[in-house]
Length: 429
Image 1 (cartoon, one colour):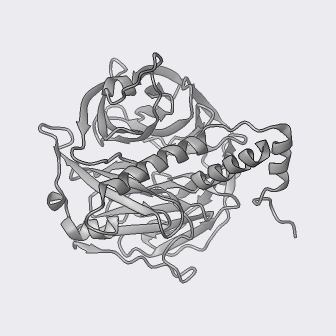
Image 2 (spheres, rainbow, N blue to C red):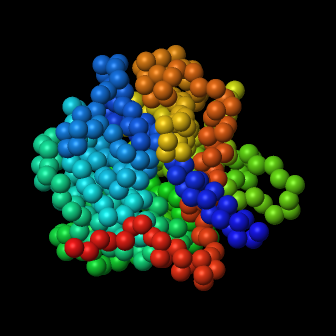
Image 3 (cartoon, helix red, strand yellow):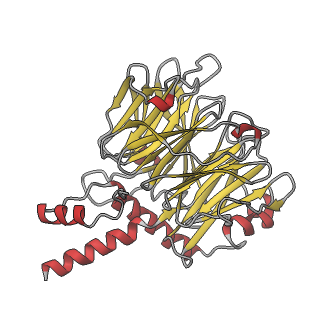
């Protein structure tokens, strides 16, 4: 009876791991906006007010074969920004954000968990779920040329800890990697990355649960910036990456006032995303189970963090799974939703907040969003999404994140069985 229960739990955990949150990314100049739901990459052209058709000549298909886990526009050239996507099919795809042709497809030996493009678009780095960060050189990618597929070279390793986030420092000197084991590593990005990164600048240690997201706040006077990190321990923390010093800690769950519990101990929640507001010392933060976002301000001289505003989304069960902001229009884009990796459960809902740094902050109605109904039909799949559907999707994401990032405890027998039945072993020729 006990074995049957263990098998049931194991199956449930595997199903939950396939649930992927909906993601959103906007062009720095707000030329286009992209949403992923499961294996779908949906793009809308905000200049021409039309849906985009992706072109991938590498395999005759324009889509990934499994759930996409991250998307990001490059910030180097806002007129010709490439966009990257990676997913559970072990592929990293780089798209030219003018023609939306796939310029490069990178094959990983294991599932990819995080990705980043260097500031000059010369290298793409991606991490796999065994804690290894790989680097690929991108010759000609900024000119919109199709680049032959290359195999990644190992850059650094976290030694069997899932890497949850990758980020380059604003000045390009460092690559930062956060992981499931509560730590953030700051590594000097070498002049010859294909030879590996061997110089560790610092470790940022202080979180008591898995680190979910990292982002830089910086100004023209402080080009290197300070790092903000979110975690499953209900905190956003501020770091000096040069020394690894913890500068301040902001407890977000109690200050947001969104949780009610009969327990004497406070309930921990997960910070799901951090979006730094360009050219300012502020950031938007989304929290698991919270119907809205928080605005945090960083005092760069006093090295302190504080919550300046709580923005609640009225009238529906909208819990952001991903947030992003354009440099030019200063609109904060949010998406809520999830996919279970099949064709049956692919839900998303897009909302936008205007005047992100001024008063009054306004949550735009659907007809006020740039692109209007045409945009919503493309990015959501349909113009109107039922509230009950979004509530179910939010619960699925919450359970899946806990299943994926919280370390599971196995007996010695079960551990040996899992080693024997792994399906990602290298093949020998």
